Structure formats: structure tokens, C-alpha cells
Image (cartoon, rainbow, N blue to C red; front, side, top):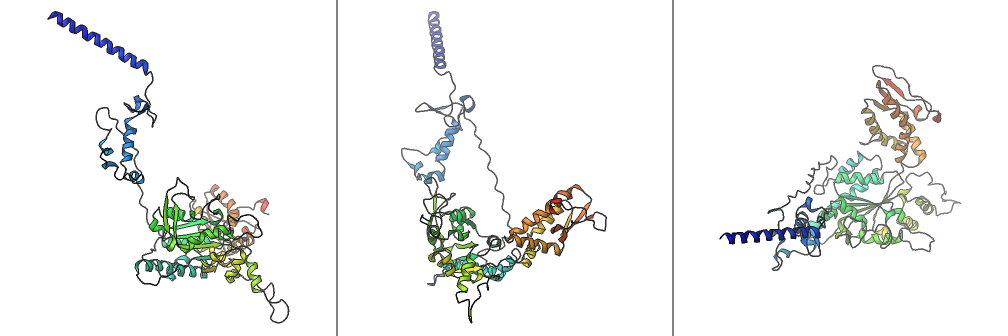
Amino acid sequence: MADEEKRDRKLDLEEADSGGDDREDEEKKEPFEKVCFLCHRTESRAGKMINLPGGISVCPSCMQNAFDQINNPEFRNMLNLSNFGTMKNFPDMGMFNLNQGPGAVKQEGPKKKEKKKKEPSALASFDIRDLPAPHKIKAALDEFVIGQDYAKKVISVAVYNHYKRVRTNTNSMDDIEIEKSNMLMIGPTGAGKTYLVKTLSKLLDVPLAIADATALTEAGYIGDDVESVLSKLLMAAGNDVEKAEKGIVFIDEIDKLAKKQNTNQRDVSGESVQQGLLKLLEGAEIEVPVGATSKNAMVPMTTMNTENILFICGGAFPGLEDLIKQRLTKSSAMGFGSDLKDRFDDDPDLLGKAVNEDLRKYGMIPEFIGRLPMLFALRKLDRDLLVRILKEPKNAILKQYQKLLALDEVKLSFDQGALEAIADKALERDTGARALRSVIEEFMLDIMYEIPKDENIGEVLITRDYIEHTGGPVITMRGVGAGLTVLEQRPDQA
């Protein structure tokens, strides 16, 4: 028995020596740590690697992520793998869970951000299902847009009838189908075309897409395709196709799509774009790229029906007044019943006399004009309207500056002469309501710079003299009843 025990002990020692040699050989063969093919973490950090054919090593965490992705219903539907887990020879990947068992690596993904509940906007008081009457829509627009009563009346009636049409054609089985009435809005720059549509969209709480026609080109050329306007609408609706199909699309700078005159080159950004927009305006099934402005193989596509989308086109149409004057003064300039050539030079409502013939001469093709049956114009802003725009809207420019100084506990006020002087300077710049801010920015620069220096200043009164650079503002100190002019005029303003 002693001899047998000695022999067994000797064999164990030999096996141990051979095992140690094997481990030394393995260490010599693999002097470096294995690295995950996907996340590039070493074996000491990621855990025991899983060896795949081809010498590829994957950590348990990445392998589990791959299985989870395959079991994701959206991923399976995208690859048409709805029966992937029921195949006889390929079991469901849900049976594999590398986060369980010995040597498992606990995987904790990033926490999802909790979506904040969107509080209902104070403006979003109207809904398609409970659409108010046109006079209520106009009354709501009056709080934000000053003047342009005719344009606001046309838009209110058009929107009211459009969404009545949407509900009628959807719920009614009657043979009579109400056709869509798209709009073409003409007006000088700064008259409030874009602001009017933005305010309307907030009041109605419907998706709105504002597209710039200058970026559109014919399909196949560098630039945005015409379908990009629908992509913006779909994005505004949160990629909800059903909601987007009842939205509003405003195409600004539509006058830039006029046909180019006397050119031998292909008009890829003019007449061709007008022809591409015809099917959108009329109503058709359009393939729209999701999250992009052009079609390519890497962008998913969806189909939208534009039959219930309201299209509003707007443009300044510079030079259209001359075409209107030519049409209105065709008769002879001599003799009885003649028209004077300068009779319409000072007419503030000249654009309101535009007809389809004038637009066709301007460069718009007849098919495009025919799909915009409602044609109306915005009046050019005069002095009285500019003064009202300064102080009456809910978001008036003067109220914004008064709020800025109120944060410094300073009261800002304007006398009537100052408001009229601001309006006169804005009229000289001939850029509409946009000129008001540029004028105010100039004379408010010194005030916004100097007032925070002295904490004793309690009130600032802007006068006509300060606007016309013949004096300074009236400053009232805290606890002092009388006003004192303390800001002097800059040397370069004398």
C-alpha cells in the first residue's frame, strides 16, 4: 500500500508540473489582454470575453445589448423579422441573458430623461374641434397685429371655412365636396405677413411650417426639394402624419420664384419650382422624407396627403406696382377722359388692385396662380399705424424696453412727440415695422449704458428732442419731484 501511495503522489506531481507548463505556454502565446471588438474595453475592465469566429472578442455587456436590440419590436419590424423568434431552427434571443450567472457583469444604462409635461399655452385657446367664428378669430388677431383689417378678415374667413371643410369632408357622406381655398398674400416688406401667420397658428394651435421659397430648387439640383416644406410641417407636428395633414404651410418670398426673363439657361429655381409646387397645392399623395429636406437612400420616407393642408403664400413682389399702373393707365394721356400717368403714385392701396394678369406679367405661371384663388394685399404702414404698433400690441416694442428697465427698478416712459418722431424716422428707412426696432436701438443705447451706473435714478422720460438729437431725456431721481436732464447728447449726434 505504501508503494501505491508513493506512485499516486508521484503522478499527481507530474500532472501539476505539466499543467503549470501549459499555463506558461498560454501566457507566452497571449501576452496582451483581450479587447472587446465593439466597446474597445479590456478584459480586466469588461469581464471575461466571449470568443467569436474570426478571432473576434466581445464583452458580455455588448453581447447582451446585441440580443436586446434584436428582440426590440421596432428593430424586428424594420428588418421584417416579425417571425424571427418563432423559427424552428433559430430560437428567440430572449432566452439569452448574459447578465445572469457566474461572472456576470451588471449593466446599467443611462437614465432616461423625464419628459416635462408641456403646459398649455395661453394663446392656444382655439381648437379645430371647437373652431370659433371668424369675428372671434379676427378679434384675437387684433390683440397682436395692428391695422390690416381687410387682410385679417380674409384670413379669418378662409381659415374658418377651411377647417369646416376638413370636418365636413371627413364626416359627411354627401356627394358635394368643398374644395380647398389656398391664399396668396401680397404686401410690402415689414407689413406683417409672416407675423400674421405665426399669430394665427398660435391661436388655432395647429402645426405650422414656414418655408423660404428662395431655398427651393428643381428636383435633382443642389437645394431643397419642394417636399421639404412638408418635412418641416411633419417635424412641427412631432412626426404625427395625421396631425400634420391638417396643418398650415406658409411659403414666404414666393415672388422669388418668378420666371427669369431673357435667359438661355435652365430656370431651376423659378418656373420649375412653381411647377413642382402644383401637386402640393392641389392635393395629392406625396412621399416626404422624415427628418431631412431631400430624398436619399439613408432617409426614411412617409406618405402625406396634402388635400387638407392649407397653403398660404406671401411675397413683397417689388416692381408689381409699376405693372398695376400700366394696366390702370392704358388710356391716352391727352384729351377728354384721359388718365394721368401719376394718378396712382401716392395710392397707399395700390397693391390691393392687383389681379391675376399683373402676377402673370410679373413671372408667375397661370397654373400656379389658379391654385391660389384667394388674392389679397396688405397696406403699406403709415405714420399713425407705426405709432400704434409701438405701444398697443401685447408684445409691443416699447413694453419690451420698459420691462428691461423695470428689472433695474427704473420706470421708462415716452411722450407723444417722441413716438411720432420714431415713426417718422422709421418711414424714412422704408422697411416697415422692422425699422422701428432699429431706430429705438440707436437712441436707447446710451440710456441702457448709463442708467445702471446710478442707483438713484427712478424714472426716464424720452422726448422728441432726444429722438431728434436736439436734447436729452428727462431723468427723475428717487425722492425728487422735479425732472432733470442729466444725459448729454453724444458729439457725433450734434
